[in-house]
Image 1 (cartoon, one colour):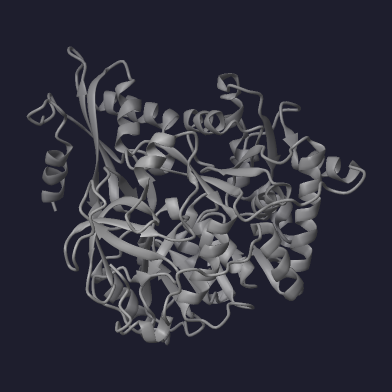
Image 2 (cartoon, helix red, strand yellow):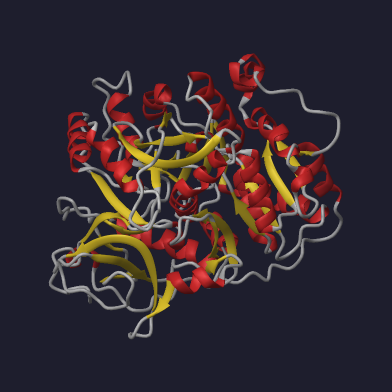
Length: 571
């Protein structure tokens, strides 16, 4: 429905124009503009090691030269399987400078998943840490084309004393010694760039070019590569800053704890901060025990995160009496924020001298991440907010393009400059998800149910597609079932999400063993070990329950909703 000019939040946002003249630049080009404006601002802070925008641009240039020296050119795809680290950021923007396409994946992905991502993207290189080398090395024979493993190390980017003490840490001691060959070390990679003669190729990148590939389940729950343009990311950053209510974020600090491979982490936690001249406090691995320490020592002004991050805030130790007035924006997304959790977090913030409240947003990876946000001064209970400037929402009757009247439930659709280019090599699902409506606009059909009230506030109800969200990560039951069913002792399985006070949902697998196979604890351990070899840690079943049979629908399909109802009735 048209956004109402009489809605109270219009006083804050102003009238949303139909067309905004976004910078016709790539992500790298827009970052360069910001770096020229704020050369001495800190671009990122990694474990206490600070890098200015001027230094960051030099690092990007050096990394781009190194990629050029190894033969990476415009249009090539390079997989980045890294945590939030300097090398990860350097590679992302260096590839964008060259017109190559970063393929962003979770570094904790299982070997079989990594093989899938490398094959489907036709990646020529995968950038990862030394601790993940052997996991990648084992799948090289399964790849459809040669792929170079570029190995970086966390310790190389640590400041003085931390670098000296790193070998003594538990994490460092757990890393297996690398072999003498079979990969390209970061040092040799950069040395290759220094030997390169001449200038880098001319920067011919355009706003409409694909800037990155992220992954999501699409409308069917099957993993799809999402092609996102430079314009998608740049528009998101400018929209987010405008919707935040802040005049500028330059000089502020963003707690960049959401991961680099995630639309929320990459699009808002990193790119929005950087093009706004803010500092990214890079957190490679979130730990509740160190949460309070980060807040007290780094004093971030902006925190984007999933609900579990804010639930952890309530459990963080050593925050009694700590003044949190430095917080100027707290944004929740990636999953539904319960009314109860919001109340608790808001009360916690107020008790710690913070005048801000947590603000909920909503979006999908198909539009990078957020596309609407609770207005600063006009929160409405249970609402996920109002559309970003220059982004439009409508509610349609599921399966159609027929717009519903206000307060009528239907499928959430959105249209705007952050909507993806499409699904990689999948025109059928692209056409199913991006549809032209009677108004001539292209609308993204999210597959989510909700409604919109008369004032344009959007209310999310549930996901139409069968998907589990655990600690902010998307988990697709059909993929896990395919893995579990592949075990020789399993006849049938069904994976569901069960309510969890910390993760929002935890993964549970119901398993019917093959005839003659006893459902013992030993079998359960065997299946868990098997899952560990094929499923990423964040998607692992937390429990396995044996059944002699699974409930079925009238047409013979496994009735997973029955299992969900039974599980959630357990309380």
